Each structure stands twice: as C-alpha cells, then as structure tokens.
Length: 479
Image 1 (cartoon, rainbow, N blue to C red):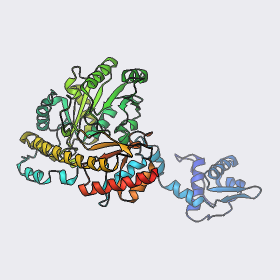
Image 2 (image 1 turned 45 degrees about the horizontal axis):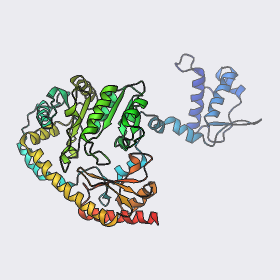
Image 3 (image 1 turned 90 degrees about the horizontal axis):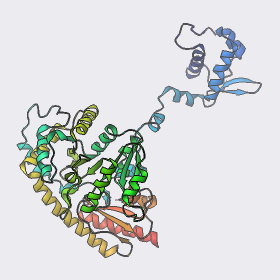
Image 4 (image 1 turned 45 degrees about the vertical axis):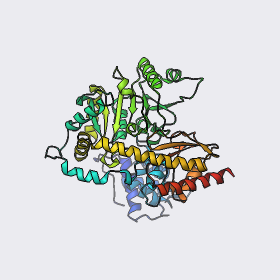
C-alpha cells in the first residue's frame, strides 16, 4: 500500500483516511466482506498515529460502511454500497422535509391531482366550469386590446398603471376610495396572502381567522412560521372580542376574513358584525385582511365591504378575477395604505418581477369597456340556476341525513351531515367512484360533519350523478 495522506491538503488527515477507505470500496478494490489490514499495519503504512486510524474506522462503522467482529478485525459491511450511494448523491428527502414551506395535507394533494382528470366529477372544486368562462368573448376582445412594446415588457413594481387606474374607478363603485398608488396587482389572491405573510409579520405572529377557514387548506401563514388561531363566532359563552383579547399575545397580529360569501361556508357577515369586527380590531390595533373575491357573485344585496367602512387604514383589501373571469389570467389586487403597498410590491419584484403583462392588459380592457360587469351579471344568473338545481336535489334526497343553508351566491353549499361520517375513508371511497369532494376536515381538522359542495364546475348531469353517488355512500355509512 503506497498511499499516504497529504499533510498540505485543506482536508484533515482523519478525513483523508475516511475518504480513501470509501474510495477503495466504491472502486471495487475492497468488495463486501473484505477484511481490512490491521489498525497497526494501516498506521505504519500511512505514517500516522494508530489513534487516527481507530477514529476513522469508528466513524465508518457508525455510518454502516464497515463492521467489526470481536477478536477477528474489521470488514466491509454488507450494506456499505447502499450507504455509499446515499453518501454520493444529495439527500433530497432531508432537504424536502426540513424546508420552510409546509406540505399540503394528503387529502388536498389528492384533490389537486384528481381535479385534472377528465373522468372525475368535481363536487367541491373552487373553480368555474369551462362552460361559464367567456372564452369566445375573451378571444374576440383580444383584437381590441392595444399593445405596445412597453405594454408587454416588465410592468411597474405595483403593476400596470393603466390597470390600477381602472381598478381605482371600479373600487369607487363599491365605496372604496383608493388611488392607483395604493393598489398593487398580484398573481391571484393567494399570492397576496403569501406576500403579506413575508412582508408584514414577524415570525410567531398570530393570524386570527373564523372557523372553518380556507386558510387551513392553503397554509401561506403557517409556512411563514405564524400562529393560526381559529375563532368560533357561534360561541355565546366566549364572544369574539373576548377570544381575541385572550389569545392575542405579545407579538404582531392580524385578522383574516372572507365577510362576503365566506369560503367554505358561503355565509355573509351582517353589517353589525362588520362594524363590530372593525371596532374590536381597531381597539386591539390588529390589521384586517378582507378577502373579497366572491362579492360580485352574490344573488342579492350585500352589506358594504369592510374596506369601504374603514376610516383608519386598518384593512388590506384583496380582490381577484380568478373566481369570475378566468383563473388562468392570474390577476388579483391588493388595496391598502401606500407604505404597505410599497413594501409588498418590493417583495413581489424579488419573487416574480411582476404579473403577466398580457393578462394585465386584458383585465384593463374588460374593466374599461364594461365587458367585465356585463359578464358578472350573466355569470351570477347562471350560478343561481345551478344553485337552485343542486338545492332541489338536496331537498329530494338529503333532508333526512343533512342540513344546509340556502346559497346566497358564489360557488358553495356547506352541507352538514347528521352524523360524523366525513372522514378520509369516505373521501377515498368516493374517489374510487370518480367523485371528488372537499371534506370539512381540510378547513377545520376536527370537522367530520361537513362537505363543501360546489355547483360552479360540474355539469348539470354530473351534479345529479355525483350527488346520487354521494348520497348512497353516506347512506351505507349510516346503515
């Protein structure tokens, strides 16, 4: 054996010896079960202390590359090749498991996977049916969208100024007075939440939400290290103000809410409730995130938005076209105090350098031409027909096993079974029958009673078939 460690190397003598033994095994010179030279012989041949050899061998034994037999020396381990292969390649599993961003729950991962399959009946999806998207009108309108080289380049940090002017005028119709400088374009409402979690809160901050909550199914704040606190509005013994005060803590806080057509319940917060929430949060100095992506889809008149009632700049308002015009456009917006919008825009530029320029120009044209509001009026009528159709089926078949509220708009009916049958087993059982539901436990881990039914995506025929299959699965569970 002619090899000796290089005493001028940046590696320690110990590490060089460990690497040399590994190389002998990897190259096949020392196959499995090979007996190594004695520690004394190795030390003499390498010109090192025996203790250095002992330490190197102990490390390789601990790693499973070598094994020792009492009174019989040291051998190459049976498992040495597998261990060395792992040692060569990056441990991606370790990288994944220790990363910052929280993985989705398995049920949500399955929902995301199976929603893409054409044979699946989607009874819970938060997306418009292709039949409800104004594809033909969108295509025709492209001919009327003026594009210059500047229009299709990188936009300003806050997004297209033309679109922000159009959104400023649009917001005014809802009583929200916002200058273009206090508006930022985002790639959908979810990106707005991610930017807020990164730019406005310290680790360990408290994010209040109403239970159940859409936030539990997407987890942007959880991944940023925030403490999520679900509040029970129906708890008469512990009112909302008392819950907030007792759970606020010493770190920063904010309150996330969907006051109009709440996701997943479809409920609408009353005007008195909105005023009380503003008052509570103002007193506790808690900013509010108002997620208002469904407001245009209400079947009747709704109370004014929280932002329109806000006189102190405490509300960050989120809007989007994903639930109304096209999820593929990826156009949403945030309205708030200018310093906050400046901060969020700076972070957005660090992450994606701006939302799609083409999408922004299309959105601007639809707002300025009146096409958007015309489409919303038609969409609302179509959703109302679908809601009535689903409720008729529920009245015929589900009265004995569940309760629900008449839908007030949007996409969803929050169906409550009489028994806690909405578990993973039911979800998987339906999946085998090509029916996909959104179970209540993805919005509240303890909820095994509810299903978020959506009438917005599946066809009328699929809705009837899917609801019949769901009924039979529930009936089998109760028998």
